[in-house]
Length: 497
Image (cartoon, helix red, strand yellow):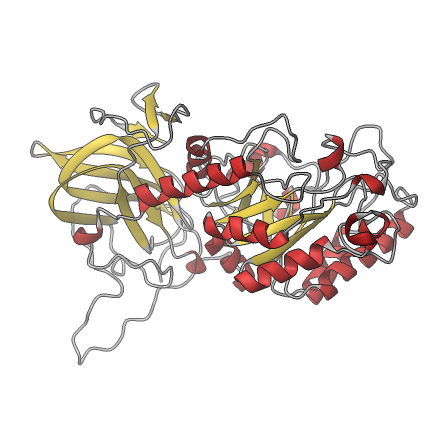
């Protein structure tokens, strides 16, 4: 039986074989290693594989130049005359996002669907003569495009008169949640939080009842909140995960609306629950569209991508529709340039020729031999290659295992450390000054059990600017002055992130 406690690697160099490598025809198939708990559910696996989602903040705030509406804005302000939810979905899909999440009701209490529990909704607006349904139009567009749909239903409601009356409001909230989860087909994510302004009415939410109802009505949906149960908030609104980020978590240590941000950022290597992190950030300074604001550059988005989706998280990027009901041209341009940056960097795996296989499936993976003391992958790239990004992935359906690892290259006849990292999870990318070598080795220094690796990649990023504060830490900065501008290679240094 493989050990479950952390094990350090010794310095004896040996070659390891791939778990899926060919075996003699007469030999019996070797069984896979035991998974290590906790494990993701099927819906959590699908969520993690999506990597990026688009958040759509839309409502009366879009028309009143507000972020947190008071709940008293007249429904007549909501009139997006050119609204086209299919455009939102098309923009998301073209930019490489595989799910969209809409603020069906934000804190102001205004509903973007025809709720039977309140008149403060689209039915009281001039849009579509009071008969329009934003959720329905988005659901139809998402289904046609093959994009997963998620919905945000704010617990805090500044308009509803029964807010503050525990039983009445919980019944009201469950009624609205039921409408959303029974009218619009498959819902893949339900997003809620504990946000509430200071001095607002005290309110006890029946979260456990809500969660049970959601899983009953939409069993394939994941539920997001500060504390799960299925995905958790990363702890900031900058889209930045901790450089160490576990999907392991103890829900008993977290309270919705009051979880320690540092605990959320890093997760818990001793956690008993599988609750991966979601990194929410807006493409603009605000969450709702404001005419005076401009979107982040593609290079800024790339930097956020490295610090979120490339740290074992899902990147939830808010791209708010404007007051016409469309995603603005400048936002679309930034998203397309962001996509082109990713394509330019990651479409070519420079390690492909050096691997026995470069499978992109998490269900095919490298595993060490039974009782193997050293966890080292040696690679001969067949020729000298320049690179400055390492990508490593674990088969997370077998549990998250790797605690610490590092990459070395053979330079001048000696092995030289290039970069060290901590957790891997679904996907981990590390950046470092450009190095060049034909021979390299990936060393797993410590792991919760025998390490498993489903993918390894080497890439060249000619766009991000890497600045070293010391020889042990690395920081990434982006130059937003010109998209797709190449930067010269730097001399090799050792870094740890």
